[in-house]
Length: 195
Image (cartoon, rainbow, N blue to C red):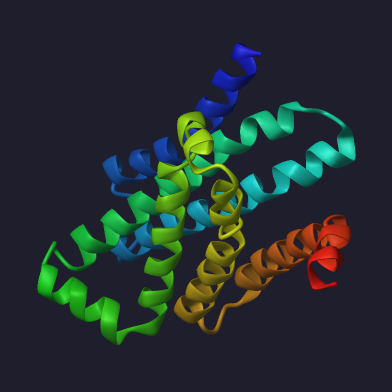
């Protein structure tokens, strides 16, 4: 089991290693900062969707391993979104805090992306077992916000790409499917709350 965990960890670092190699080889095209920002943002979104897919995969296959990898994959979504945020602050805005604050307030797509990051950060901080015990029922309520983070991240991507929406629509379709599965699978609990 430890070998599977280590394998997943190494595989999750492969995109980061590939990006670092591209930086070293100066292979990021005419606008390296923009390319790095887009790549890290997309990997953050991919890992977020993958983390959301773990529970349906466990239910469909009956294999507990999917649920056991969910937290690690979710933390990698936070890792890539943190790198994405750092790339934006460092290479696009040069850590000019006034400009960063101005962008957060004046550009709605950045506000949406930052809101998604804040949610992922809160989920990452509260992911250890000690926090699960400490928060009790509130832990589940908080971690349901992962779907809101997904919606915000998709909106952030759509706003950035604007014209070439193929990938954004694909990611949005996956998220919609995962949301539909959750509603269907939990329909009994939802109806009980509404009654």
